[in-house]
Image (cartoon, rainbow, N blue to C red; front, side):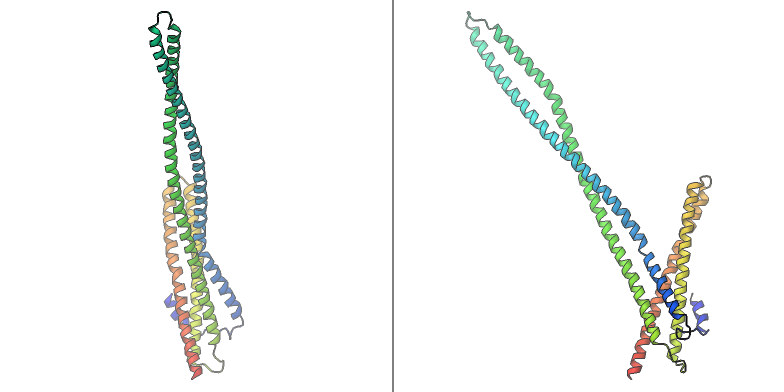
Length: 306
């Protein structure tokens, strides 16, 4: 790229004042820069949309767990109330059995009274107590199972809340990355506009060819080469992305030759990485040329004051 710049610098390049198509070229370059800056934010936007969808799913899962937990809380409270009621009934039955047993003891001393009816009633109450114990056992087991399920759901709800907070942090990070990318694109576009403005002010008079005018034309030529390289790199990046997608398609459709598809995918990924590196280099060159033009403009302003 630098060798190409040295070859082009030896050839006269028409300035915007010499060519009637300079205004159209500036607009075309401006639109290319805008499209290039917009493409930098597409990947963070897609990641942000995917994380937001995952965050919504996590919120739905958490809401479901909360509803199930509330339902189990209600069941646990009902089971505990039923057990307390059964235990109260059990204590009442035991007191009644003790009272009847004491009454049988007193009546046994009296030969005229027959305690068989009381003994029958005592046996009936004992049978009811045993039946109550049989019914309370499964109820207590159900209570233990419900409490274990309740604890498990509470733990899952806590884990889901942690996952949701992690997703929210990732969404905030992607928001910052997207804002940084937009700020970088806006800065690059502002630098381009500043370079264009400085070049328009540094156009030399046609009748006087000063060294400052020659420097401005060299800067104009370098900027044009940088923009052309940036356009070619963007086109190459698009082509590499298309090749990578075709490699994925061949890998999915051509099951009989997966190794070749994987090799094509690896080649496409390597080419994409190289193109990204080549894409960033013209931007650095453009910023360097912008700084150089700013120094030339400052020098011109000082010369005018002197």
